[in-house]
Length: 67
Image 1 (cartoon, rainbow, N blue to C red):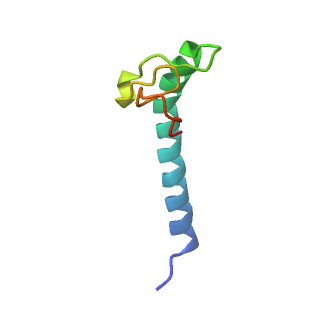
Image 2 (image 1 turned 45 degrees about the vertical axis):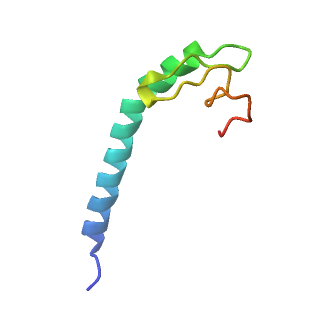
C-alpha cells in the first residue's frame, strides 16, 4: 500500500515546519556565538552546548580541535 500524493505533501509540509522551528530556535544562539567570535579564531566558553571551547581547543590540551 503506497502513500497517496496528499499524504506525501502533508508529510513534506510537516518536515518543513519542523525544520523551520528548529532553525528559528537555533538562529539566536548561533548569531550570539558568531557575535562573540574573536578575530583570532577563538570562542568564549559556550555553556549552552556544554563545550568549553577556549582558543579553538575544546579539550584545552593543545591538540587539534575536533571540529
